[in-house]
Length: 255
Ligand code: 13P
Image: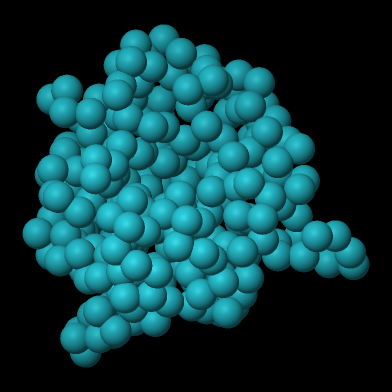
């Protein structure tokens, strides 16, 4: 099974719509990103989604950083899958560690969000990862297995195959520290085995699993070269168009 490489920028709470348009204009001048033989997506804040949908080339998809699982209703501050689809969004991050730790998102809610996303044709980007205490206690495999199982519980094998998982060790996010690529590979291989147990080997072979946490143009190729790592989910280094383009090129094997 050849899985196409995927680079996703998660802007978190950075950039206004005006700043997003400037990013798109800059990216359009970076021929490397446009020509990279990898799939590209950017997940801006909700308020910059339409600006990016208009300004980015068709080849760069626009994603959401979060999505609610209800169709509509009295849920102040939430955004439904249908609203995202209508705005031109094609993928949605679910279960990012910042949502889990700062906003109380549970394993069960992440599973509901994945189901709701898929129902509306959005690709869920399911985030899993251990925190430092869990890593120090040698609980990494157990934690990511629990998070993965809960996130995919309501999805069919075919739906899992078309989804994306991002392994983001919490201690590597925004810290400048990363696991050794071989260590990330081992965790991701474990995630694939969990998916195989729950949804079968076809789904496990097809699902794209990314690494995330302090990825930069300088280190992305080493992660992407691992057999089970299909790309990266990038925060800080995705905010600059030239850095994003360099990561696309590096992931494509261009340097
Ligand atoms: P950084 O790339 O800034 O470490 O963030 C990773 C992340 O959380 C992406 O979702």
